Image 1 (cartoon, rainbow, N blue to C red):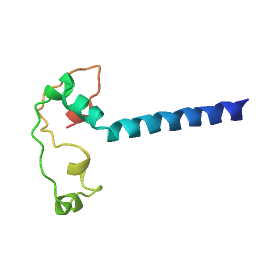
Image 2: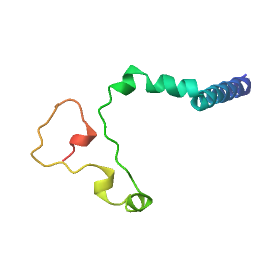
Image 3: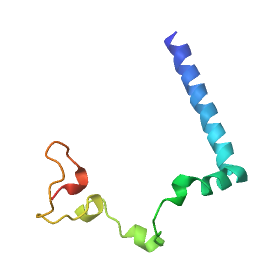
Image 4: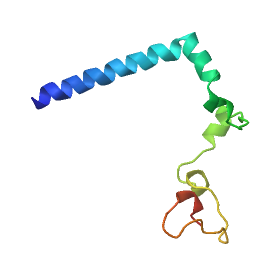
Length: 87
């Protein structure tokens, strides 16, 4: 029974993936996404990354794994730990 359930879960996931893949290639899906109110509310100016910029990123460099935050940054909450407020 476990094997049957596992295979049916894999089949369902594969079917969902195919639906998303087909939708992502559909021009109507793209136009729906562009006209979505969620997309219109994003106030974001994209930046251009070159291959050279990407090669400069080093996983052992702390500035690429967490932002630099000044020690006097105000605490936003005493009960919730937010990773990007880490001094």
